[in-house]
Structures are given as C-alpha cells and as structure tokens.
Length: 116
Image 1: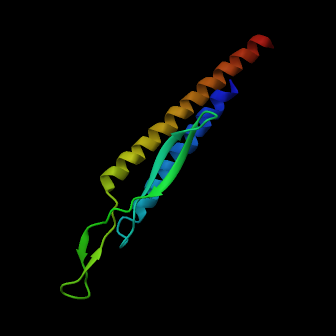
Image 2: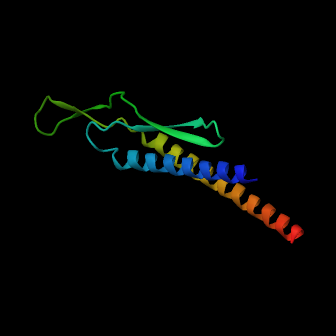
Image 3: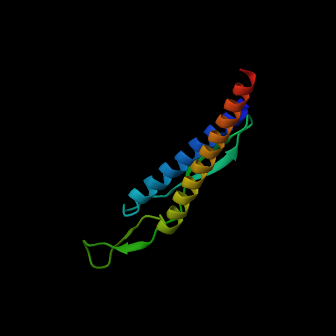
C-alpha cells in the first residue's frame, strides 16, 4: 500500500520538475544565446520516476543585431509550442498522481474503518 503512495508522490515531484523546467525555458525564451533545458523521465529501481535535466545545445536562430548593419546574434533555441505541450503534460501528470493518492487514501480509510 505504501509503495503506491511513494510512486504517486514520485510522479507528482516529476510533474513539478517538468513544470518548473518549462517555466524556466519560457521565461528565458527571449534571452540571447539561451539554451533550452530538457527534462527526461527514467524509471527508478525502487519504483517511481527519476527526472534528469540536460541542456539542448542545438543553435538558436540568427537574429539581426541592433548595433551594426550586418551583424547577427544567436537567439534562444526555445520553441514556445513545445513548452506549452510540456506544461500541459506536467499538469496532467500531477493531476493523475493526485487522483491516485486520493483513491489510495479512501481505500486505506475504508480498511481502517473495517478493522476498527
């Protein structure tokens, strides 16, 4: 029973980490030379999820610099559409794991009522 609680809490933490990563990327989408941070999920050996973060080093678009006529600067490689999808995915992940926690709580409460 408690393994289910741990697994759901792990899922909530993973969703929170994904949501924070997307927020960080969105906040820096207009920052010159910013490289997007990517969150990847891995199964934990003890159950649950581990989130690993990495930086995407692909170049951003070349944007004209305001200082000189023919100079360019590299923009951010953040794609706002992808970050919106990640934000929705994180929200759904958190909500699903919260529903699991609520169900486990009700089941445990019912078991305690039967015993008591």
